[in-house]
Amino acid sequence: MNRPEDITRPDNFVDRAQLHAQKLREQVARGTAKRAHQLAFAVSEQEARAIIVVTLGMITFINDQIGRLIDNLKATGEYDNTIVVFTSDHGEILGDYGLMLKFGIHNVGVTRVPFIWSHPRCRDQAGKLRKDLASSLDIELSIPATAGMDCFSGAQGRVLFYAAIPEPDGLLNEEESQRPILGMKNALVMRSLVTRD
Image (tube, rainbow, N blue to C red; front, side, top):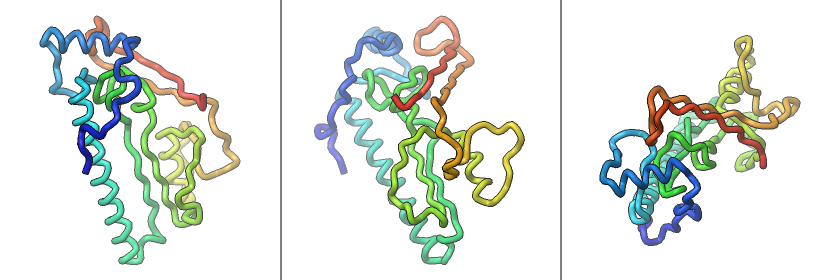
């Protein structure tokens, strides 16, 4: 569907300010780079474009399957009785800083995840894009709320479709590895605050 040569390289592909990226590029130069795991790894422009093309194909495949699911719900009469939620646990670095995958960098590509909420009572707002800050913690509150259930005491987050609950000032992302990664001497402990700005 796409060709690697048609993919635009991320603007920050050669950003040399990221210490992690420098260490990973040094591993490639020494021939000691490890790519058989989930950790971020350095790539050439050609590799980045090829991986982005495959990722776009996967996104198209998922989109098609969700379309099939919705068509089936409509055909069986269950669409108006079903909440459809689509999300992910993380995004991808996807070429930023010349890297791929995740771990150790909380850039926008990793911290922004897809989130689609389709609820029978909200379908009049289909296609509406909300730009307020939301967290995966909000999902665990929003699903029971649609069924009229209370959440457990002490639950964090907010119910996304109640206008009376204000948007948070920021969202905290946390990451703790159990061992040193990305060429570091100690286990990674990372916190980042995401705000509208």
